[in-house]
Length: 228
Length: 244
Figure (cartoon, rainbow over the protein chains, first blue to last red):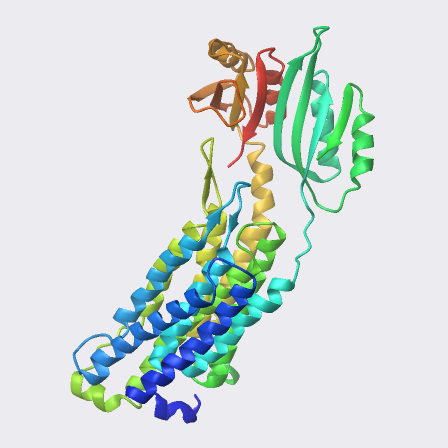
């Protein structure tokens, strides 16, 4: 623990002001980064959240340390953590393509709230260290693109249902996982049933798409294959 | 636990740093694996929540430290009223709400994102263990989480394609053909458990649809074989398997 902060750990007008200012700085830094990236919760949201959390923490301490009422001084501020879970959940958007957006913002907002609680309690060391960690996670790690092998969608038109079994067995041998399989069937003018299989494939390693298509088309009864 | 690490079990500026870094690193390890799989919650989400959870425990420790130190006279006067698990207890419910945001429910009776939510929840608990200085517990949870999320996941999805039970989604020309479809399934020696006809048609689809839960006649029957057999019926337009 840093003893320089010891004079700032009691509650009086000066320390309340100090904590508020520190809260605005910490919350503001995290918020500005989000604002620059144009995310739903920006500077103002973060500052408001952190000031609220700091105040809740101050009230808890005030009731116990100044008013000397018998209470657990962390009961009141602790509810902030649950409350922010709700607010955070509200920033999460479900997009059309079955993914969610705003999860990092929600997690950051939640963590910022806890920093606010620490500041309000006078736990400056932890608050400052974790502010820098949050900033590190959001700024530095946000730039890192994690390499992933992308799944791809392939449409295969074929005749005879056994053909699909050959194709699927081939995928299995190539270590390509089938994530989704959808079959559509149409009967053409000459009365022959033609199937279209929409398969979503997740390869383990990078796959040469053109080569894959050529290989599929070389199977018997495969009319053509297209990669989307 | 070794005496060399004794100071890490006390509450001082070094242990605060070590614990926060540990929480961040462990959250990062799990998050990295999730990011690679293109799951919704990735590296930063796991890191940020682990930092927050770690801080909640450190905050409790700080308050206790102050109550036995600088604020001791007040404590002596008013009486010790303190619950060391108050903050962390709220973390558990708070993260529950946050994780609920990752759960998506899609059209035909499927829910995704449950594993992400559950993983986030456990990862946060790992962050709290780091904050408390339970380093051994952190390592164990990290290993278990890694095994469950990264090693068991591919096993599970491979296993699901070999299950006797399968759920299929079919679109067909007209509702009268539903009987013929179930007859075809029965002819393959499979048992039909449940049929759900979807009244609200999927967007862009002009045909009636049904979700059928069935059990294969024998173990290890090919799921794609069953799909192909049904797809061969002239009035079936679209068919695919639903995998949870």
